[in-house]
Length: 315
Image 1 (tube, helix red, strand yellow):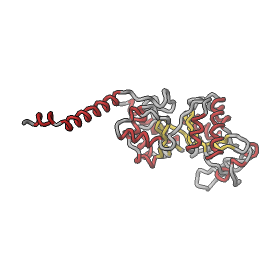
Image 2 (cartoon, one colour):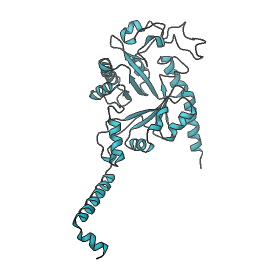
Image 3 (spheres, one colour):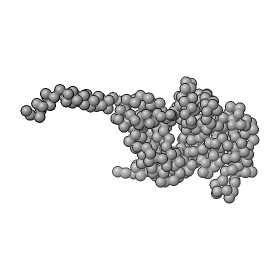
């Protein structure tokens, strides 16, 4: 009896072969099905070969962070079209542009921004502790550089995109997220803002139905997607609720370039933060990131323009 005849007469083995063939057919069918985009149009995606440069806190290396002076420099001097900022809600409900809920970071006072009113905060010099030479000089201690709220920033720069971190957590963070969504709605900034923060903050922002925003993954969303991707089933992953993924430059090796590329194919914007030197910039280029977040926009813009010129000059 030939080997083929033995298989033909072996009923259990025939069933196994059919099951395997069915599984392979289903997997092939799944791979043919086009995946659903995380968002139809993502303004944070790069729209050319040039990577997006994002100024962290305005232009924090050269000017007092989170002040209008800093944002003016980033925009006018370096052509920055995206700002990465933090917001803290004051005790009277104003969203102050700040990366920390700590007055001592910016002013000559201690305490929390969230425990003061906007009127009280406006009397403080938020550039008091700014220095460019490691404390040898403090250029702004004789001036009054005021804090700004999110409405003032949106009004001054309605044409740029924003990556906004809600600094507070728990109930204060939730209230801040809701207030931020209202500011986005009233200033007509829908689809120009990505909101990040604690899981509770992002969830609260997503639940606001009066505004269209982008958010990073929360809870185990990214891990769930990666589990499906390992099985080759990422095409049918329908719970892709995030449109923005931010990765610190020193943690890039923890992410698979293949997974990041697949997320980008589904219109998720990939950004690398803490990019303040050429080495970290090159790492971001290697994974084909959509943008980098930097405290040194002068350097990063120069690197981006140089790379673009090299590509354009190729035959």
